[in-house]
Length: 328
Image (cartoon, rainbow, N blue to C red; front, side, top):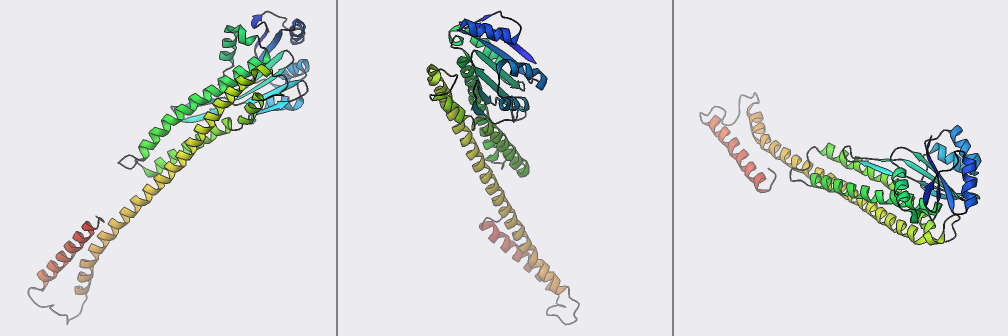
């Protein structure tokens, strides 16, 4: 569906023809205006109207309709096609979800296609309309503003992930041992999956932003290169944070598994110590439980208390030895 459609002249929104073709012709005739159309999850039939009027490439149209694309930048004869993936982090459920945002820019037009509900297009359009000086730079300003908003939100999400990771780290290295070992390991693995999902959105975007920060990209003004370079710098910082989160999660998981191994060894030592202490009276009782008529001291009056005392002393001695070695 069409969310918004407007002509911007000298950075200010103006009323224009309702027909795409007439609006685009009017924007091109003025020379300092452009048309911005916003679409939300359009159907193929709805997008056909836009495709014919703006001459968009069929491959880009296919990507825009199907979604599930990696962040990328494609240059065609009549337009520039960019794919970005806005990210949402739900702190209540500790889940990272990604939507998709496609941007077409060309001669006096911008077409944005949004899949999902997290894309910040409404806020971007409002901010640009409030600052006509920036919007006066045309479609390039729109592409920059969208890229900057998406990457800035990456920084916020990375900060939230860092806070949650610190909480998880505290849980793992708590004196109590982090609670249920299986649940802790599952939490670490789940968190690592969320970081991977975040990385799939931020990592591939580096190449498109670096390309936009350089020269020779059609439909992008050279004056915008420093601004795209700033976005690329912010994205590099985000990627470094994500890489650090991933490495730290791997270290935490390794440390947790090591803790589990140490605790299992402690348990095995305790079990072995108690089994050794139980073995002595079991052996003595087993020997004297054999049904033989002729056994040493079998008929002596003090044999039973002597044997019980011997077993008690043996168990006590083993207990002290194991206690001294830290097995109990």
